Image (cartoon, rainbow, N blue to C red; front, side, top):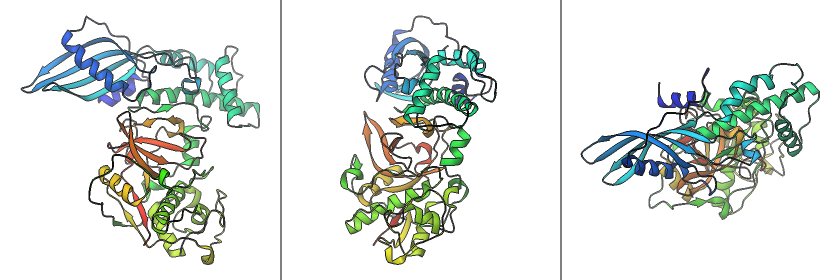
Amino acid sequence: MAPWLQLLSLLGLLPGAAAAPAPAWEPPSPELLKPARFALRMYNRGRAAGTQAALGAVCGRVRRACRGSLYSLKATLEEPLCNDLTVCRLPLSKKTLLCSFEVLDELGKHMLLRRDCGPVDTKVAEYTNETLNSILPLLNKDPQPQDFSGKMASIFKNFVTTYNRTYETKEETKWRMSVFANNMIRAQKLQALDQGTAQYGITKFSDLTEEEFRTIYLNPLLREDPGQKMRLGKAPKGPVPPDWDWRTKGAVTKVKDQGMCGSCWAFSVTGNVEGQWFLNRGTLLSLSEQELLDCDKVDKACMGGVPSNAYSAIKTLGGLETEEDYSYHGHLQACSFSAEKAKVYINDSVELSQNEYKLAAWLAKNGPISVAINAFGMQFYRHGIAHPLRPLCSPWLIDHAVLIVGYGNRSDVPFWAIKNSWGTDWGEEGYYYLHRGSGACGVNTMASSAVVD
Protein backbone atom coordinates (compact mmCIF):
# COMPACT_ATOMS: atom_id res chain seq x y z
CA MET A 1 0.00 0.00 0.00
CA ALA A 2 1.27 3.49 -0.88
CA PRO A 3 2.42 5.59 2.11
CA TRP A 4 -0.43 8.09 1.81
CA LEU A 5 -2.98 5.23 1.66
CA GLN A 6 -1.42 3.77 4.78
CA LEU A 7 -1.83 7.14 6.45
CA LEU A 8 -5.47 7.41 5.40
CA SER A 9 -6.06 3.91 6.73
CA LEU A 10 -4.34 4.87 9.97
CA LEU A 11 -6.67 7.84 10.40
CA GLY A 12 -9.79 5.89 9.57
CA LEU A 13 -10.48 7.70 6.29
CA LEU A 14 -10.62 4.49 4.27
CA PRO A 15 -13.55 2.05 4.56
CA GLY A 16 -13.05 -0.33 7.44
CA ALA A 17 -10.02 1.58 8.67
CA ALA A 18 -9.25 1.93 12.36
CA ALA A 19 -6.63 3.73 14.36
CA ALA A 20 -3.28 2.00 14.66
CA PRO A 21 -2.59 0.01 17.84
CA ALA A 22 0.23 1.21 20.03
CA PRO A 23 3.48 -0.52 18.96
CA ALA A 24 5.76 -2.52 21.20
CA TRP A 25 8.96 -0.60 21.81
CA GLU A 26 12.51 -1.41 22.77
CA PRO A 27 14.97 1.15 24.17
CA PRO A 28 16.17 3.26 21.21
CA SER A 29 19.73 3.25 19.97
CA PRO A 30 21.41 6.54 20.98
CA GLU A 31 22.25 7.03 17.31
CA LEU A 32 18.53 7.33 16.47
CA LEU A 33 17.81 10.12 18.92
CA LYS A 34 19.53 12.93 17.01
CA PRO A 35 17.62 12.40 13.71
CA ALA A 36 14.42 11.79 15.71
CA ARG A 37 14.81 15.10 17.52
CA PHE A 38 15.44 16.81 14.18
CA ALA A 39 12.22 15.27 12.81
CA LEU A 40 10.38 16.53 15.90
CA ARG A 41 11.66 20.07 15.30
CA MET A 42 10.40 19.90 11.72
CA TYR A 43 7.03 18.61 12.95
CA ASN A 44 6.73 21.48 15.45
CA ARG A 45 7.90 24.17 13.05
CA GLY A 46 5.45 27.05 13.01
CA ARG A 47 3.49 25.80 16.03
CA ALA A 48 2.89 28.17 18.90
CA ALA A 49 4.36 27.49 22.32
CA GLY A 50 2.06 25.24 24.30
CA THR A 51 0.86 23.38 21.21
CA GLN A 52 4.13 21.65 20.32
CA ALA A 53 4.45 17.87 20.49
CA ALA A 54 7.01 16.05 22.62
CA LEU A 55 9.04 13.03 21.54
CA GLY A 56 8.03 9.71 23.06
CA ALA A 57 9.38 6.31 22.07
CA VAL A 58 11.67 5.84 19.06
CA CYS A 59 12.74 2.86 17.01
CA GLY A 60 14.16 2.44 13.53
CA ARG A 61 17.01 1.42 11.29
CA VAL A 62 19.82 3.12 9.45
CA ARG A 63 21.26 2.62 5.97
CA ARG A 64 24.78 3.84 5.31
CA ALA A 65 26.06 5.56 2.18
CA CYS A 66 29.44 6.96 1.26
CA ARG A 67 28.52 10.52 2.27
CA GLY A 68 25.92 9.95 4.97
CA SER A 69 23.14 7.88 6.50
CA LEU A 70 19.42 7.41 5.85
CA TYR A 71 17.34 6.87 8.99
CA SER A 72 13.93 5.19 8.77
CA LEU A 73 12.24 5.94 12.08
CA LYS A 74 9.01 5.21 13.88
CA ALA A 75 8.24 7.46 16.83
CA THR A 76 5.40 8.36 19.11
CA LEU A 77 4.68 12.04 19.62
CA GLU A 78 2.72 13.31 22.59
CA GLU A 79 0.59 16.36 21.84
CA PRO A 80 -0.93 18.56 24.57
CA LEU A 81 -4.66 18.22 25.03
CA CYS A 82 -6.60 20.83 23.10
CA ASN A 83 -8.88 22.98 25.25
CA ASP A 84 -10.12 25.29 22.51
CA LEU A 85 -13.53 23.90 21.60
CA THR A 86 -13.72 26.09 18.53
CA VAL A 87 -10.90 23.96 17.16
CA CYS A 88 -11.39 20.64 18.93
CA ARG A 89 -15.19 20.78 19.03
CA LEU A 90 -15.30 17.71 21.31
CA PRO A 91 -13.24 16.56 24.30
CA LEU A 92 -11.60 14.08 21.98
CA SER A 93 -8.45 15.73 20.71
CA LYS A 94 -5.66 13.46 19.52
CA LYS A 95 -3.03 12.99 22.20
CA THR A 96 -0.57 10.34 21.00
CA LEU A 97 0.57 10.13 17.37
CA LEU A 98 2.46 7.37 15.63
CA CYS A 99 4.82 8.87 13.05
CA SER A 100 7.05 7.44 10.34
CA PHE A 101 10.01 9.63 9.44
CA GLU A 102 12.82 9.33 6.94
CA VAL A 103 15.78 11.56 7.76
CA LEU A 104 18.87 11.93 5.62
CA ASP A 105 22.11 12.82 7.42
CA GLU A 106 24.56 13.98 4.77
CA LEU A 107 27.89 15.23 6.06
CA GLY A 108 26.29 16.21 9.35
CA LYS A 109 23.36 18.11 7.79
CA HIS A 110 19.89 16.66 8.32
CA MET A 111 17.02 16.69 5.83
CA LEU A 112 13.48 15.38 6.41
CA LEU A 113 12.45 13.30 3.39
CA ARG A 114 9.15 11.87 4.63
CA ARG A 115 6.68 12.42 7.45
CA ASP A 116 3.53 10.38 7.99
CA CYS A 117 1.67 10.81 11.29
CA GLY A 118 -1.62 9.47 12.63
CA PRO A 119 -3.38 8.90 15.96
CA VAL A 120 -2.68 5.88 18.16
CA ASP A 121 -5.80 4.62 19.96
CA THR A 122 -7.16 8.16 20.17
CA LYS A 123 -10.50 9.13 21.59
CA VAL A 124 -11.46 10.23 18.07
CA ALA A 125 -11.17 6.67 16.79
CA GLU A 126 -12.90 5.28 19.89
CA TYR A 127 -15.75 7.75 19.55
CA THR A 128 -16.11 7.18 15.83
CA ASN A 129 -16.01 3.40 15.90
CA GLU A 130 -17.90 2.62 19.09
CA THR A 131 -20.20 5.53 19.84
CA LEU A 132 -20.89 7.70 16.79
CA ASN A 133 -23.32 5.37 15.06
CA SER A 134 -25.35 4.92 18.21
CA ILE A 135 -25.72 8.63 19.10
CA LEU A 136 -25.70 10.27 15.67
CA PRO A 137 -28.33 8.60 13.46
CA LEU A 138 -27.37 10.80 10.52
CA LEU A 139 -30.14 9.70 8.17
CA ASN A 140 -32.63 8.53 10.78
CA LYS A 141 -35.73 10.45 11.84
CA ASP A 142 -35.95 8.61 15.15
CA PRO A 143 -35.53 10.76 18.27
CA GLN A 144 -32.01 11.31 19.51
CA PRO A 145 -31.06 8.79 22.20
CA GLN A 146 -31.14 9.70 25.87
CA ASP A 147 -27.34 9.74 26.17
CA PHE A 148 -26.71 12.26 23.39
CA SER A 149 -23.69 14.30 24.37
CA GLY A 150 -24.59 17.45 26.28
CA LYS A 151 -21.30 18.97 25.19
CA MET A 152 -22.16 18.32 21.56
CA ALA A 153 -25.53 19.98 22.00
CA SER A 154 -23.90 22.95 23.75
CA ILE A 155 -21.32 23.43 20.99
CA PHE A 156 -24.00 23.20 18.31
CA LYS A 157 -26.15 25.72 20.20
CA ASN A 158 -23.21 28.14 20.27
CA PHE A 159 -22.71 27.60 16.53
CA VAL A 160 -26.38 28.39 15.84
CA THR A 161 -26.15 31.57 17.91
CA THR A 162 -22.82 32.70 16.46
CA TYR A 163 -23.88 32.29 12.83
CA ASN A 164 -27.56 33.21 13.31
CA ARG A 165 -28.88 29.88 12.03
CA THR A 166 -32.60 29.11 11.94
CA TYR A 167 -34.16 25.79 10.94
CA GLU A 168 -37.80 25.35 9.98
CA THR A 169 -38.59 22.13 11.86
CA LYS A 170 -37.33 20.04 14.75
CA GLU A 171 -36.45 17.33 12.26
CA GLU A 172 -34.24 19.71 10.26
CA THR A 173 -32.59 20.92 13.47
CA LYS A 174 -31.84 17.33 14.47
CA TRP A 175 -30.47 16.58 11.01
CA ARG A 176 -28.26 19.69 11.00
CA MET A 177 -26.89 18.85 14.43
CA SER A 178 -25.93 15.38 13.26
CA VAL A 179 -24.29 16.81 10.10
CA PHE A 180 -22.46 19.29 12.32
CA ALA A 181 -21.19 16.52 14.62
CA ASN A 182 -20.03 14.41 11.69
CA ASN A 183 -18.25 17.44 10.24
CA MET A 184 -16.41 17.97 13.52
CA ILE A 185 -14.97 14.47 13.20
CA ARG A 186 -14.01 15.22 9.58
CA ALA A 187 -12.30 18.45 10.59
CA GLN A 188 -10.22 16.67 13.23
CA LYS A 189 -9.05 14.19 10.61
CA LEU A 190 -8.13 17.05 8.28
CA GLN A 191 -6.18 18.55 11.15
CA ALA A 192 -4.21 15.33 11.61
CA LEU A 193 -3.46 15.11 7.89
CA ASP A 194 -2.34 18.69 7.29
CA GLN A 195 1.41 19.19 6.82
CA GLY A 196 1.32 22.92 7.56
CA THR A 197 0.26 25.05 10.51
CA ALA A 198 -3.44 25.38 9.63
CA GLN A 199 -6.16 24.91 12.22
CA TYR A 200 -9.44 23.33 11.13
CA GLY A 201 -12.64 23.52 13.14
CA ILE A 202 -16.01 25.19 13.34
CA THR A 203 -16.82 27.62 10.52
CA LYS A 204 -20.03 29.10 9.19
CA PHE A 205 -20.21 26.10 6.82
CA SER A 206 -20.13 23.45 9.56
CA ASP A 207 -23.80 22.47 9.24
CA LEU A 208 -23.52 21.73 5.51
CA THR A 209 -22.81 18.34 4.00
CA GLU A 210 -19.80 18.15 1.71
CA GLU A 211 -22.10 17.84 -1.29
CA GLU A 212 -24.13 20.90 -0.27
CA PHE A 213 -20.99 22.95 0.24
CA ARG A 214 -19.55 22.00 -3.14
CA THR A 215 -22.84 22.59 -4.96
CA ILE A 216 -23.48 26.01 -3.42
CA TYR A 217 -20.04 27.59 -3.08
CA LEU A 218 -17.61 25.91 -5.49
CA ASN A 219 -17.06 25.99 -9.23
CA PRO A 220 -16.68 22.67 -11.11
CA LEU A 221 -16.33 24.44 -14.48
CA LEU A 222 -12.73 25.32 -13.61
CA ARG A 223 -11.61 21.74 -14.14
CA GLU A 224 -14.07 20.99 -16.94
CA ASP A 225 -13.52 24.01 -19.18
CA PRO A 226 -10.04 25.42 -19.93
CA GLY A 227 -11.61 28.66 -21.13
CA GLN A 228 -10.22 30.99 -23.77
CA LYS A 229 -6.56 30.72 -24.70
CA MET A 230 -4.35 33.58 -23.51
CA ARG A 231 -0.82 34.55 -24.38
CA LEU A 232 1.91 33.84 -21.82
CA GLY A 233 2.95 36.79 -19.68
CA LYS A 234 6.67 37.48 -19.30
CA ALA A 235 8.26 36.92 -15.91
CA PRO A 236 10.15 40.00 -14.71
CA LYS A 237 13.91 39.87 -14.37
CA GLY A 238 15.98 40.69 -11.31
CA PRO A 239 15.86 39.64 -7.67
CA VAL A 240 12.57 38.64 -6.07
CA PRO A 241 11.68 40.29 -2.73
CA PRO A 242 11.55 37.81 0.18
CA ASP A 243 7.99 38.88 0.96
CA TRP A 244 5.33 41.11 -0.54
CA ASP A 245 1.81 42.21 0.38
CA TRP A 246 -0.33 44.38 -1.90
CA ARG A 247 -2.83 44.95 0.93
CA THR A 248 -0.34 47.28 2.58
CA LYS A 249 0.24 49.17 -0.68
CA GLY A 250 -3.35 50.11 -1.48
CA ALA A 251 -4.03 47.68 -4.35
CA VAL A 252 -6.66 45.45 -2.68
CA THR A 253 -10.30 46.23 -1.86
CA LYS A 254 -12.07 44.84 1.20
CA VAL A 255 -13.04 41.16 1.36
CA LYS A 256 -16.38 40.54 -0.35
CA ASP A 257 -18.97 37.77 0.02
CA GLN A 258 -20.25 35.79 -2.95
CA GLY A 259 -23.15 34.41 -0.90
CA MET A 260 -24.90 31.20 -1.90
CA CYS A 261 -23.71 31.46 -5.49
CA GLY A 262 -20.82 29.77 -7.32
CA SER A 263 -19.52 33.12 -8.56
CA CYS A 264 -15.97 32.89 -7.21
CA TRP A 265 -14.63 33.27 -10.76
CA ALA A 266 -16.14 36.77 -11.02
CA PHE A 267 -14.67 37.87 -7.66
CA SER A 268 -11.24 36.52 -8.59
CA VAL A 269 -11.27 38.48 -11.86
CA THR A 270 -12.61 41.76 -10.45
CA GLY A 271 -10.01 41.58 -7.67
CA ASN A 272 -7.28 41.24 -10.27
CA VAL A 273 -8.65 44.09 -12.42
CA GLU A 274 -9.00 46.31 -9.33
CA GLY A 275 -5.30 45.81 -8.64
CA GLN A 276 -4.28 46.36 -12.25
CA TRP A 277 -6.28 49.59 -12.48
CA PHE A 278 -4.80 50.86 -9.23
CA LEU A 279 -1.24 50.12 -10.34
CA ASN A 280 -1.68 51.69 -13.77
CA ARG A 281 -4.15 54.50 -13.05
CA GLY A 282 -3.57 55.22 -9.36
CA THR A 283 -7.19 54.75 -8.24
CA LEU A 284 -8.59 51.78 -6.30
CA LEU A 285 -12.21 51.08 -7.27
CA SER A 286 -14.45 48.27 -6.06
CA LEU A 287 -15.75 46.71 -9.28
CA SER A 288 -18.98 44.90 -10.12
CA GLU A 289 -19.12 41.11 -10.01
CA GLN A 290 -22.84 41.22 -10.76
CA GLU A 291 -22.10 42.71 -14.18
CA LEU A 292 -20.11 39.59 -15.03
CA LEU A 293 -22.84 37.26 -13.72
CA ASP A 294 -25.45 39.01 -15.85
CA CYS A 295 -23.54 39.96 -19.00
CA ASP A 296 -20.85 37.27 -19.52
CA LYS A 297 -22.78 34.95 -21.84
CA VAL A 298 -20.03 32.31 -22.05
CA ASP A 299 -19.82 31.56 -18.33
CA LYS A 300 -22.71 30.29 -16.23
CA ALA A 301 -23.24 32.87 -13.47
CA CYS A 302 -23.84 31.07 -10.15
CA MET A 303 -23.21 27.71 -11.81
CA GLY A 304 -19.55 28.59 -12.37
CA GLY A 305 -17.18 30.26 -14.78
CA VAL A 306 -13.58 30.60 -15.91
CA PRO A 307 -11.38 33.72 -15.49
CA SER A 308 -10.13 33.71 -19.08
CA ASN A 309 -13.72 33.89 -20.36
CA ALA A 310 -14.46 36.72 -17.94
CA TYR A 311 -11.52 38.80 -19.22
CA SER A 312 -12.83 38.36 -22.75
CA ALA A 313 -16.32 39.41 -21.66
CA ILE A 314 -14.96 42.59 -20.06
CA LYS A 315 -13.18 43.51 -23.30
CA THR A 316 -16.28 42.75 -25.37
CA LEU A 317 -18.59 44.74 -23.09
CA GLY A 318 -16.23 47.70 -23.01
CA GLY A 319 -15.32 47.71 -19.32
CA LEU A 320 -16.61 47.23 -15.79
CA GLU A 321 -18.91 49.36 -13.71
CA THR A 322 -18.27 49.89 -10.01
CA GLU A 323 -19.96 47.97 -7.22
CA GLU A 324 -21.83 51.13 -6.31
CA ASP A 325 -23.34 51.54 -9.78
CA TYR A 326 -24.01 47.83 -10.42
CA SER A 327 -24.52 46.19 -7.04
CA TYR A 328 -24.23 42.50 -6.20
CA HIS A 329 -27.35 40.36 -5.70
CA GLY A 330 -25.89 36.86 -5.89
CA HIS A 331 -28.19 35.51 -8.60
CA LEU A 332 -28.55 35.89 -12.36
CA GLN A 333 -30.41 38.96 -13.60
CA ALA A 334 -30.93 40.64 -16.95
CA CYS A 335 -27.77 42.42 -18.14
CA SER A 336 -28.06 46.15 -17.45
CA PHE A 337 -24.51 47.21 -18.29
CA SER A 338 -24.11 50.83 -19.35
CA ALA A 339 -21.00 51.79 -21.31
CA GLU A 340 -21.40 55.35 -20.03
CA LYS A 341 -21.04 54.11 -16.43
CA ALA A 342 -18.02 51.90 -17.05
CA LYS A 343 -15.15 53.16 -14.89
CA VAL A 344 -12.36 50.78 -15.95
CA TYR A 345 -11.32 48.85 -19.03
CA ILE A 346 -8.72 46.21 -19.86
CA ASN A 347 -6.59 45.85 -22.98
CA ASP A 348 -5.71 42.17 -22.80
CA SER A 349 -5.17 39.22 -20.45
CA VAL A 350 -2.24 36.87 -19.90
CA GLU A 351 -1.61 33.39 -18.59
CA LEU A 352 1.21 33.21 -16.05
CA SER A 353 3.99 30.73 -15.38
CA GLN A 354 3.36 27.63 -13.26
CA ASN A 355 6.75 28.16 -11.62
CA GLU A 356 5.95 29.58 -8.18
CA TYR A 357 9.19 31.56 -7.96
CA LYS A 358 8.26 33.29 -11.22
CA LEU A 359 4.71 33.81 -9.95
CA ALA A 360 6.09 35.58 -6.88
CA ALA A 361 8.31 37.74 -9.08
CA TRP A 362 5.37 38.67 -11.31
CA LEU A 363 3.13 39.46 -8.34
CA ALA A 364 5.70 41.69 -6.63
CA LYS A 365 6.11 43.78 -9.77
CA ASN A 366 2.72 43.64 -11.42
CA GLY A 367 0.01 43.16 -8.79
CA PRO A 368 -2.45 40.56 -7.40
CA ILE A 369 -2.97 37.38 -9.44
CA SER A 370 -6.14 35.46 -10.24
CA VAL A 371 -5.66 31.76 -9.50
CA ALA A 372 -7.76 28.62 -9.17
CA ILE A 373 -7.30 26.01 -6.46
CA ASN A 374 -8.66 22.75 -5.14
CA ALA A 375 -10.74 23.84 -2.13
CA PHE A 376 -10.13 20.62 -0.19
CA GLY A 377 -10.44 21.34 3.55
CA MET A 378 -11.48 24.97 3.12
CA GLN A 379 -14.98 24.25 4.44
CA PHE A 380 -13.40 23.92 7.91
CA TYR A 381 -10.34 26.20 7.60
CA ARG A 382 -9.94 28.71 10.45
CA HIS A 383 -6.37 30.06 10.34
CA GLY A 384 -2.73 29.18 9.71
CA ILE A 385 -0.90 27.93 6.63
CA ALA A 386 -2.73 25.05 4.95
CA HIS A 387 -0.67 22.29 3.35
CA PRO A 388 -2.90 19.29 2.58
CA LEU A 389 -1.39 16.05 1.33
CA ARG A 390 -1.15 16.15 -2.46
CA PRO A 391 -3.27 12.98 -3.04
CA LEU A 392 -6.09 14.59 -1.06
CA CYS A 393 -5.80 18.03 -2.72
CA SER A 394 -5.09 17.11 -6.32
CA PRO A 395 -3.94 19.95 -8.60
CA TRP A 396 -6.10 18.43 -11.35
CA LEU A 397 -9.34 18.89 -9.38
CA ILE A 398 -9.43 22.66 -9.03
CA ASP A 399 -12.87 24.01 -8.11
CA HIS A 400 -12.48 27.49 -6.62
CA ALA A 401 -11.14 30.79 -8.00
CA VAL A 402 -9.40 33.23 -5.63
CA LEU A 403 -6.87 36.08 -5.65
CA ILE A 404 -3.24 35.93 -4.50
CA VAL A 405 -2.38 39.30 -2.95
CA GLY A 406 0.99 38.51 -1.37
CA TYR A 407 3.50 36.00 -0.12
CA GLY A 408 5.98 35.53 2.71
CA ASN A 409 7.01 33.21 5.54
CA ARG A 410 5.67 32.50 9.01
CA SER A 411 8.15 30.73 11.28
CA ASP A 412 10.06 29.65 8.16
CA VAL A 413 6.91 28.20 6.53
CA PRO A 414 6.42 29.81 3.08
CA PHE A 415 2.89 30.91 2.18
CA TRP A 416 0.68 32.57 -0.37
CA ALA A 417 -1.73 35.17 1.08
CA ILE A 418 -5.04 34.56 -0.70
CA LYS A 419 -8.09 36.81 -0.75
CA ASN A 420 -11.24 34.69 -0.72
CA SER A 421 -14.84 35.71 -1.39
CA TRP A 422 -16.69 34.13 1.54
CA GLY A 423 -16.84 37.21 3.75
CA THR A 424 -14.69 38.33 6.66
CA ASP A 425 -16.33 35.83 9.04
CA TRP A 426 -14.41 32.98 7.40
CA GLY A 427 -10.70 32.15 7.67
CA GLU A 428 -8.29 34.88 8.76
CA GLU A 429 -10.68 37.80 8.31
CA GLY A 430 -11.60 36.46 4.90
CA TYR A 431 -8.08 35.38 3.88
CA TYR A 432 -6.65 31.91 3.26
CA TYR A 433 -2.97 31.08 3.68
CA LEU A 434 -1.65 28.22 1.53
CA HIS A 435 1.79 26.63 1.41
CA ARG A 436 4.02 28.17 -1.26
CA GLY A 437 6.56 26.29 -3.37
CA SER A 438 4.97 22.85 -3.51
CA GLY A 439 2.16 23.42 -6.01
CA ALA A 440 -0.24 22.91 -3.11
CA CYS A 441 -3.83 22.27 -4.25
CA GLY A 442 -3.00 23.35 -7.81
CA VAL A 443 -2.44 27.01 -6.85
CA ASN A 444 -0.01 27.39 -9.77
CA THR A 445 -2.04 25.65 -12.49
CA MET A 446 -4.39 28.47 -13.63
CA ALA A 447 -2.72 31.80 -12.80
CA SER A 448 -3.70 34.78 -14.91
CA SER A 449 -4.10 38.54 -15.02
CA ALA A 450 -5.76 41.28 -16.97
CA VAL A 451 -3.54 43.80 -18.74
CA VAL A 452 -4.21 47.54 -18.43
CA ASP A 453 -2.07 49.79 -20.66
